Length: 266
Ligand SMILES: O=C(O)c1ccccc1NCC(=O)[C@H](O)[C@H](O)COP(=O)(O)O
Image 1: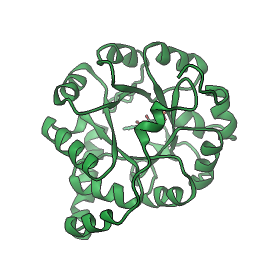
Image 2: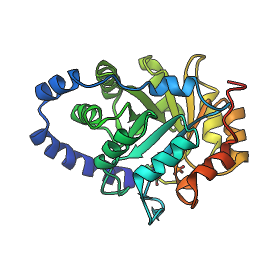
Image 3: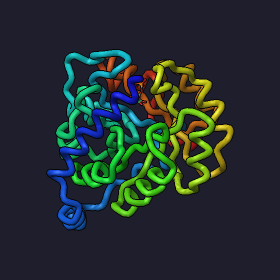
């Protein structure tokens, strides 16, 4: 299964990270960094009736190479110009052709809060995320135990990071709600084990979320009908990657998908 392969690769990467990232040193370095930009807060005070996390995504396991002419900083600038609330940067090298360097470069150039999109399986990756300039990390319920989800969540918050906790089915959501910490929950419409996508997953799971949770619908959103559907299902924000990456002008693509900036209806 592909997700198992990704996690196996992450274990190897973490073994290397254990040699290069010393937690005590990382903590001291982090203490001298500027505070993170509020990722969740940017979605709550969003620029449009539905919040937007626009993704910088060169390739994916399900689609291969998506954007051959990939200029991460220009793309991030275009997203910022288009009024995106937050940006997601894929940092996985092996399967998404991403890079920590892309996130670092974008951090230097744009003000929008950044999600480090990767497969977190070890606490060192959370320190690393903070050090490279992320404002938020992703925790994927499908690859973590309940205690890992809880511990990693707490560590990330202690380091000043926001956390997008991702679920794809009811048992995963129940685990996350049972832990009782997550305030920002993403429903991935893509089954990461089969790559099958279905927006109805958003509809099913958001209906089970308590008031106060900021719900994000992730993946396979490519039309205004899709946005309307997940919004009606209760999504306060959408995470969109491939659709924007396939458009020559991503700034225009954001306007076409989400309309002009308007705080009305927030
Ligand atoms: O995108 C994939 O093929 C993929 C495969 C296995 C694990 C994760 C995967 N994607 C990560 C994501 O969650 C998406 O990049 C993100 O939600 C945006 O989705 P999309 O708009 O469909 O590019």
